[in-house]
Every structure is written in C-alpha cells, then in structure tokens.
Length: 293
Length: 347
Ligand SMILES: Nc1ncnc2c1ncn2[C@@H]1O[C@H](COP(=O)(O)OP(=O)(O)O)[C@@H](O)[C@H]1O
Ligand SMILES: [Mg+2]
Image (tube, rainbow over all chains, first blue to last red; front, top):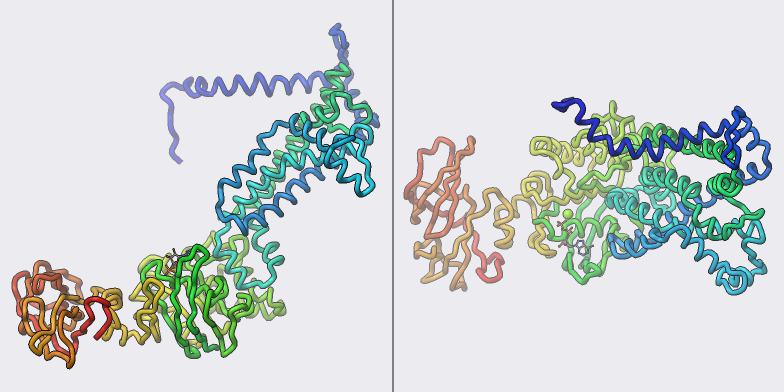
C-alpha cells in the first residue's frame, strides 16, 4: 500500500482537531463524567460528594422499579423491532411486485420518517384519546376499552403502536431498495428451480436481503431503546406515575427529576455498555458473516 | 427429450409494444435451434415465453404435444442459462447446482451423485465449496451450465450465455456447450446476437428482426440463400455485398449497365443485387472494381472499394498479388441473390 505523507507532521493533527474537539467535548468528557459520578453519591444541593463504590449499581439491581422498567424496555425493544421489521418487510415484498422502481411513492412514504418523535407521541395521544380517539373506538368494538396513561398495558400498547408506525417507513424503504437490487435473473432462475413462491422467498430472496436486514436490526434496536424518548415523554405528559417507561426515560427521571445523579449515572453507564455490546456485535458478527458480492 | 411447437405465438407488453409478432415453428427432438437477431429484436422475449417467465399474449406453445401456455416455469421440464449466469450469490457452487433437484424432492445421496457427475463433466470439482463471487467468469458460466444439466431437462434454454466472456474464452465455451448438447442430446433453444455463434452452433437458425421471423433454415441455407436483404446483411462477416441494379432488356444489370446474367422470367425494373465477398471472381469478368484498400487478415485478404459507384468488398487468397487500383471482376450467376428493392424480400 502506498503511504501518503504530509510535509508538516502537525498538519494532520490540525485538520483533525475540530472533529476531535467535538468528540471529546460532547462524547468522551460526558461519558467519563457519567462513569465517574456513578461511583459517588452526590448531594442534591451541590454540597460535595461521597465515594460509594459500586453501591449505585447494586441499588439498581435491588430496585424493583428499575428491574421492572428494564424488563419493559427489553420487551418493548423486541416487540417494536420485530414488528417494525416484519411489517416493513411484508409491505416491501408486496410493493416490490407492483412498483418496479417507482421513486415518487418511496419519497412519499419516507415522509413519516421525518416526523419528530414528540409529534409521533402527540399523534398517538390523538388516535388513542379516551373519548374520541379512532383507535380507541376501533378496539372498543371488540370490547377492549383502551385507557392510556391509566392502564399499564394500554400505555405500553400505544407506545409500541406509535414507535412501530414511525419506524416502518424507514425499514420499508431499505427493504424495498434491497429487494430491487436483487438481480431479476436470479429470481427468475429460482422460479425455474423452485415452484413454491414461499420457499423461494426463504431460500433466495430472504438470504439476499440479510445484509439489509442485519443493518436494520441494529438501527431498530437503537431506535427503540433511545429515539423513542420524545414520544414516550409526550404520551406520559411528563407524569409517568406507575406507567411503563424505558431505561433511557428512567435515566432522565432519576437524574433530572429525582436529582439522583449517582444512580442516574450508573444507569447511563449500563446503557453505554449496552450500546458498546451492540456495536461489537455488529462489527464482529454481522460484518464478517453477511458479505457477498 | 422434447419436441417444441409454437403456433402463432405473439407478445404484446403491457405498454402496448408488440415485441414478438405471431411466430410459428417447430423444433425437432434433440435439435439445437439458434435464435439470432440484433439487440432488441425480441429474442429474449420469445425465449422467456417458452420458459414461462413471460406470459404469452396470443397463440399456443406446446412441448411434446401438450400445451403449456399456463404451466408454471418449474413444471415445464426446462432449464435455462442466463446471460449474467444468475447464480445464487449466497450459495456455494454445490448448493447452486443442487438447488433445483432439492426442490423437486430428490433423495440426498442421488443429488450428491448428480452434482459430482456434473462437476466432473464441467471441471468444477475443486470449486464445489466456493461461492460464485470467488470464481472467474468462465467458471461461473460452467456452474450455470451445471445447474442446467443436473436437472436432465427436456429442453435447454440459453439466453446469450457467452456474451459476458472474453473472445478467446467465448470460442472455447462455444465448442464445449455444443459438444455437451450433442452428448446429452437435449433439445435446445439458444439465443444470441452473434452471427458467428449462430452459424457455428446451430442445427437450424431463426433470424429475427423487429419481432418478426425473417428466415428459418440451416446455417448453409441462411448463408447462401438469405430470404431478405436483412438476413443477407446481418449474417456473415464481412456481410453480403448489396447493390442497386435493374432487370432490363433481358439481363440483370448493375446500375452502370453491366450485364451480369440472364433475366429470370417475368421480372423487370429495379432490383437489389447481393453477392458474398468470397463468391466474387477477382481478375477477370465484365465489371470494374476500384479497390481503395486492402485489409490483411493473415489467412486471406479483403479488398474494399467500389463497383458501379457503390461500396463493395471482395475476398481473395492470401498470396493474391492484387493491390489498390482498378480490377476486372466476375459475379457468377449461381452466386447472385436478387431482392425486391422495396420490400427487401428475395425474388
Ligand atoms: N417488460 C417490457 N415492457 C415493454 N417493452 C419491453 C419489455 N421487455 C422488453 N421490451 C422491449 O421488447 C423488445 C424486445 O426485447 P428483448 O426480447 O429483450 O430483445 P433482445 O433479447 O432481442 O435484445 C425491446 O424493444 C424491448 O425494449
Ligand atoms: Mg436479450
């Protein structure tokens, strides 16, 4: 490999400086602060701090509220990711057979993606409005009276619906372009080799979509864990009570509302480790295994 | 093994474009039929209708006497080799070849044996566990062939299978494909835009032009008595010389009046004259040939110039002393083709 050289060894450093500054200022420094304060108990009025070791962490494990929300987050993420990917894939497969390369549709569908999370939450509040929300009325026909922000399950349901609704278009676009990049002749060869369309999908189309799918899997998990914050906040109207919240929302509650800096920092560190694990998973497993061309 | 019959098969695409005009022909058992024509003339469309990948707008297609218009591609007992090979990129060579057998419920050990046999026949044995991306173009081509032959189909369909290979490999594969087809005796339809491939491989050729069949015949018939000006100029390199001429006072004449042969009965007026470059006698005869350029091809030479003010090419042996300048030429009556100047149809 050819190595390009700089006449002045400080030039590359200088060029990187703005980026490095931003990363340090807004990422490494806060991350370090979180790790540090997770080992301290801070006086809520700012009068000093005490080193408490792992106590902030053990407190999390002992807290039924935290464990309950951790479980909720796990389920919420799994359900939102599975539904967002599943529905999008289904729609993309159906659309692919009809719209070969119709770009305008795709752009229109993409608009939902541009909806800000709090707005998605607001829309959820409208469609699930207890008195006149269309979805509330719809489910009332089946004898299910939805009462969001009062019933734990109903609130979770509304959160999932709003999150999935907002994420499906993104996944759809990616799946659709993934499908459309499969050479038509490959599918035709499969039509001659295999008469069952379902089996063709699982043995040819789906494996060829795997790179797109794994990429989206990571994106969707990250989305359901972190980007749903604004939507949840809007649905709960800043007043969670005993309603379900995700771990990210819990960090905000304990840190900013409860003034428990140490505990909230420990929770942030847990989330950071989670993101790190996801990243490692993505690079190690996905990038190595799912690679064709 | 199969006989294939097309009866007024027509294709109109959804946008209203008629890609194949009503076409009727039959393919005998074990025959190697080549569909040839310029790009966009409807060759692939016709082949894909036979495969079942494209609906037949009108007409009837039958294989072994059974009409198969509505039959699923997987049930037509055909195998197809595509231009870009269309291998499954996520499967190894072994799984690529086995895929069609597995889906037909063949037993595992029989599949393994068949894959081994095909791989041996095609020199792929060492590559069975590779992915298509790790193979060269020629090897991918072989895998595509392997995928077709393990199936023991009644009919092979080839859509320009060699056009992505370089010239040398293409010549070699041309011979291999033809030899393989001979050995297996499977009825085949082979689509190409390359007239050399058509001439060398075919038992019979169908020349297509703008969705219409121009001529059906053996390579020799197509070459020596082209049914139209289109066939005359499409088949053969260099193509047949075509010149304006006329039938006047009992003789076929060049546009400068030179008489070439006795006029056929009941004909008069303008005609298009055609003659293959190698049928021209250079050195003596009634016409003048103004040679401007000599093209050296090693085995022989081509003289390019004008006859009666129209472009003309003649073929001479490699030791011919003739160079640029004016030469006498003879155009033997037996080698001349006459076409209607308006319709292009052979007279
Ligand atoms: N799906 C389609 N819709 C409309 N026209 C098509 C379609 N597919 C092919 N054509 C047209 O039909 C003609 C024949 O195409 P094709 O059979 O692929 O030609 P060839 O294989 O001889 O190059 C072309 O003019 C092409 O543009
Ligand atoms: Mg074609």
